[in-house]
Amino acid sequence: MSPLPQKIARLTLGSVMVTAGVLHLTTHREEFTAQVPDWFPVSDDLTVLGSGVVEIALGAGMAAAPKHRGLFGGLLAAFFIAIFPGNIAQYVEGTDAFGLDTDSKRLTRLFFQPVLVLWALWAGGLLRRRR
Image 1 (cartoon, helix red, strand yellow):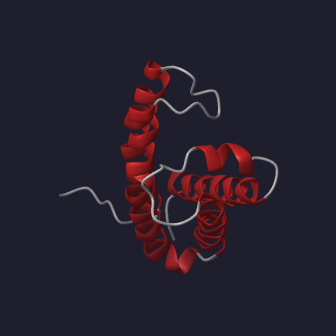
Image 2: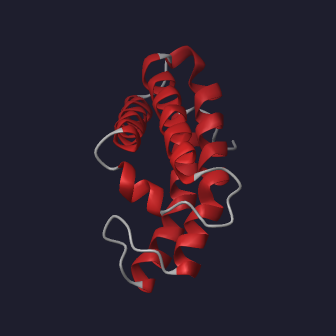
């Protein structure tokens, strides 16, 4: 069993991802659609719907399947890395969404992505201290 802080991090990340996925499919769909880069080869709406479903699945797995937390932590980390080019495109193209309406706000967001990757890896039990 993982220590309590790691368990809380796993459950929180899972809940955040499920919530984000549901928002992709419902009330925030337009904002998410605005963030899909012009160069991405799949339609904006299909990209948002697909990523929403993936977020729900990964978040639910992270929260509800503690025995497989390593798998879901690794998949979430990979997902965060895979969507990072979209975040870079939002900065480069100056796309406004979710209150990210200045270059400095969009740039700051880029530095949060590695935090999400590390959060997923740690909550999944994939980061260990060397002894």
